[in-house]
Image (cartoon, rainbow, N blue to C red; front, side, top):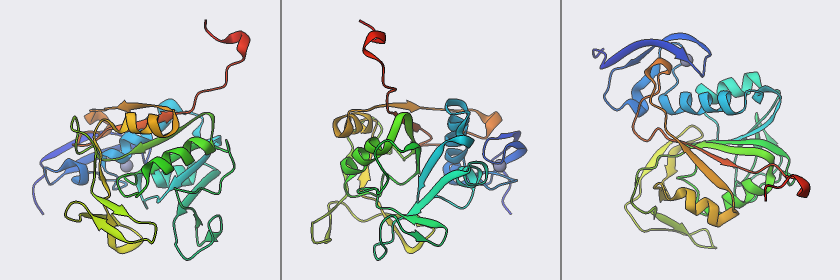
Length: 248
Ligand SMILES: [Zn+2]
């Protein structure tokens, strides 16, 4: 086994204990793992933000689209009694239960308006074909005060976001850039990257659904959080304010 590039003790937000973090490859985003639970930095950053911003997450209704089988997905699943994991199965009825998942298409959710406290997605938004529809559906179904907390690789940084692939109404996919696939736990083929996002994703979300998004950057070795493309995004649905309480 290769010698560690980095090894340090710290607190792991996804398995909630003191652990050793270790990287045997310089690409920390995929290789700086928790020796106890196998989580990677972006999963720990997302869970840390949920713990900090929504410390009552155990009692909230949380929907996670396309969860992983470790890290934040595992902690949310075991700690939250109203955790709803979903996958999209094209041949199944949306809203139905398939194994341990609810079948949901992010572009047309079956959840009622204002029924979900937290939508969670981890490296999903770079694979959707109609991001504006997804952001509108997330905004529609969030309760006031709720949020979409998510990671997505902002590979374009200051450069404008760029579409890589398009889907026509007949389902035909056309590639605007050479196809790139990421690993997908439920498909051997992997998931096609449809958008190279930059920091302007926040403006795109606002223009899609009218909600503001915070971009949070954490670099904290004591929690095993250091990597390229480590931003966590939080799109917040405002709490309704009574007219007499509005700030003039
Ligand atoms: Zn861990």
